[in-house]
Length: 256
Ligand SMILES: NC(=O)C1=CN([C@@H]2O[C@H](COP(=O)(O)OP(=O)(O)OC[C@H]3O[C@@H](n4cnc5c(N)ncnc54)[C@H](O)[C@@H]3O)[C@@H](O)[C@H]2O)C=CC1
Ligand SMILES: O=C(O)C1=N[C@H](C(=O)O)C[C@H](O)C1
Image (cartoon, rainbow, N blue to C red):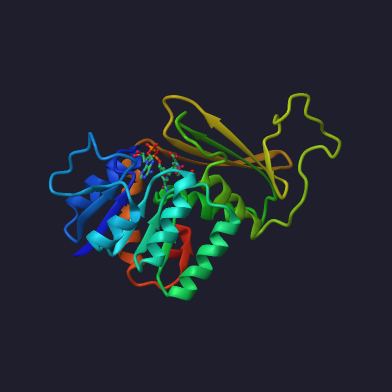
């Protein structure tokens, strides 16, 4: 049995993760971390508001973070420093955060997995986009999420753009003299790749990667309709993180 703690158990992802871990034959839920204790009844599973106390008193082997961009880095650092392996679904990590965590894992030899997207379909979309960029180098990403999402662009969109960059030399797209009459009209810009973020009630998590070429358009699209789509990936990461001593950024690194 792998002893698991979860941060963010009241949230949309956290609630789903609690149910998955409790139902899984190889995992034991030993504690949860939230901003308050009241109103959350998980039977004998204790609710903590201090990560330090949780790590010390309940001795988890894996710490799952599904909270907010501002808390993700703090929790992940604290877990590694306490010798506990983080599995992080929280998005909004900066390049500097990733570098710091890579160094911390190296120093402590404690493994950590940061997965901007846990769903297999989204990972395939990202891998296909990386491949397509070898042949079609003008690309824009449209990510669409529910209107409770805090970060933009999504972690998935950023990761997709990073993978595309492996095969696409940086260059500006669109007309060289184009101008925005309303700021932001052309979206965010990552080395010339445009990223557009849509936030609407009713949506869960969706993304289109559009590749344009002379007389043609290739569209790669993925939709998560429920948060159940992320749970097999979370379970995979809990098992994989037990055998790694470094930082793994992206589930595509665990799937051939
Ligand atoms: N990697 C992936 O596949 C996915 C990642 N996400 C990411 O997971 C994160 C959570 O997403 P949702 O569940 O939709 O958000 P949510 O807003 O529903 O849940 C956030 C949770 O964090 C908790 N929280 C707030 N302050 C806290 C504190 N001080 N200590 C501990 N917990 C605290 C809240 O009570 C809540 O339970 C986001 O960063 C989102 O981008 C979401 C879906 C899939
Ligand atoms: O906040 C969400 O909901 C999601 N966040 C992740 C992201 O930022 O990419 C993963 C998925 O898109 C759902």
